[in-house]
Image (cartoon, rainbow, N blue to C red):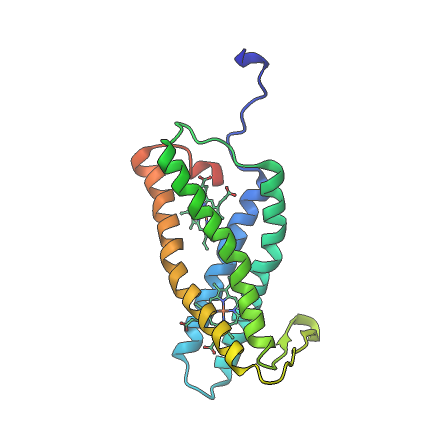
Amino acid sequence: MTSSMPPRRARYSAAQRRLHWLIFAAVLLAYVFVNLKDWLPRGDAARVSMLQAHFAAGLAVLLLVGPRLLLRLRRGAPPVTPSPPRPLHAAGHITHGLLYLFLVVQPVLGILAVELGGRAIGLPFGLSIPALSIPGNHGLVHTIRELHEDLGDIFYWVIGLHIAAALWHHSFRGDDTLRRML
Ligand code: HEM
Ligand code: HEM
């Protein structure tokens, strides 16, 4: 019976692993740049550059999450050995779902906050996403921006929980959860 079954894939595919770590780096940079911006004095040119860098890192997340979700749908996730109890498995699913949602929603909110505020987003090579100007939308822009900032704060905790869980699986439970992503 077992000999006729296809070999069980022990790790996420190379592309899935690469995308996971690239997105991790981009999210980390988005957080680092926006925090650096906050530490710089108003009117400082470097403050504007930090915000531009925050936009670029955030846009990279949005670009990378599309292929990542497609790969996830096509290739799924390899099983964890030894397999975790059902509630733990479910908790992982919920956290991963929230993380995926964040990776899509957070950059979109950021883009809308800038664009609806009547500002264009500068891109490399002299390109830019032009501003969307809808008159009388100050309230909406404010709400979107607050949502973006609040989500950004909340996800420090969700990402922290995710990292703690990965390390716990590896060091305390002794399963291959983390090795599947390396
Ligand atoms: C996954 C990607 C992103 C993450 C994790 C993220 C996170 C954050 C965080 C933590 C803040 C600061 C919140 C605070 O001060 O309490 C922030 C502010 C902001 N973000 Fe993002 N962001 C992302 C993508 C984007 C994108 C793509 C744009 C626009 C192109 C954007 C535009 C902004 C703006 C305009 C602010 C307000 C900055 C200010 O204080 O002037 N963000 N973001
Ligand atoms: C911005 C930070 C991060 C984000 C947004 C993120 C996002 C995600 C998502 C959405 C998944 C689900 C994969 C899937 O099954 O489709 C995942 C899996 C995973 N991540 Fe992260 N991750 C981050 C950082 C990290 C870090 C720093 C570590 C290691 C310490 C890590 C370790 C893992 C592991 C081991 C898995 C596989 C979990 C499993 O299949 O049960 N992640 N990550």
